[in-house]
Image 1 (tube, rainbow, N blue to C red):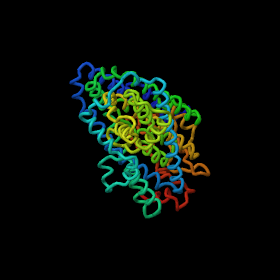
Image 2 (cartoon, helix red, strand yellow):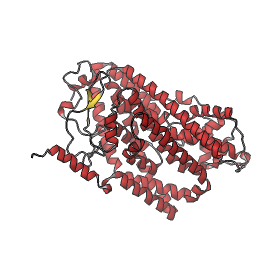
Image 3 (cartoon, rainbow, N blue to C red):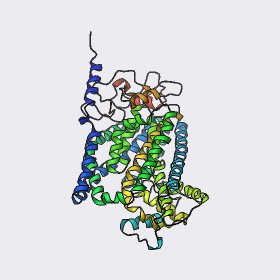
Image 4 (cartoon, rainbow, N blue to C red):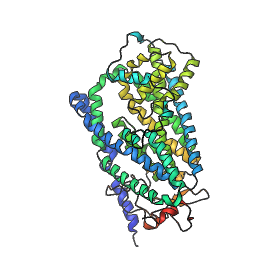
Length: 507
């Protein structure tokens, strides 16, 4: 019997991927554990590891802006109907608000049940804010709820990329993508350059990600070395309540959304394990953004949906931050003996909906949003946030993890809402089964939905990493390198006026 070499290659990739020591997430996990031990046993050495962690995070942040811009521009410029882009954006914003409200309500319920602040009896007039905490408090007190609206428009074309402001980059990318789509054939060469640059940027990402274990080690060693395990024990119950509430939100609330989609939340978490461990090690969700976008695209979510929903969610869909804000606000109120009625707590929730958006993408954003909330409400003393400043670092990991999970589920739900989600393909990808890479732009139905390419498995591709081959080489966000016949995603039936057809002749 003749063996299929293509099939043989995929089986070989499966065998190789089964070796745990070859997986990136294994080394990230080892690095986190080693970092904890170094920070605990040798605090000064742990603090000296800070440059390793910050350098890796900065290297990842360097790519966030270009990836967001190129992905959104390429996605919007490629669609035939711009109305669908606007509809998708409105659906996403509506979903984000509902998710944020549910997260805040859950936090309020948890802290009202357990009331961990009772008995602290802190005198707000005697609390002194010093150092970086004082700077964040001052910034939060001057934060206006409407500033995130006016802040969206950048002062120059380069400013958002220099400052790393995701909201402003999204704004520029949407306008640029719409304009590129509107000018038709003239913009075809520019769109081709955008697609080629996207591949280059993801290749750079693949190279930098190889240093993820070092970054996780440095960040974790510094955090434990500087703040110490005694910080965890001093307000341990509040940390446990926050983590417990967050786990409940992910498993029950987000799990219910996944069940509605006929998907499993635990399968999704397992599929995204590398990104989750990277967040755990670095305390920020930004380095995991490119990986999330890449894996969701491979799972079958349309490029334009991923490019619009995921970056926007990083600024507007902050479920972890929402839980933190409601828990922290009520804890401070209880600790300072400030009684709040149910009506006042609902007013607090309404203020948090606005202030949480105002601090999106800002360094120390959660702390600034909390200060802005307390200052706007005026009932709870803003100086009381010093009571929880010491444990904020250890709560930031959980905030980022929940934010990340919420954005992954949101993207899948919006794709389903747009009737463009191939649930069977997503299920197979999440289970670790091999599926052929998608042929970009190949229509499969009346809605013009993307369908899997009618080709066999790509030889040597690692099924666990659609953006990597068996040799570890990155091939871009879509998985394997497209063949000549599908390089531009154009079929013989493509109308000459479609953006995909316009790009077909551009090399």
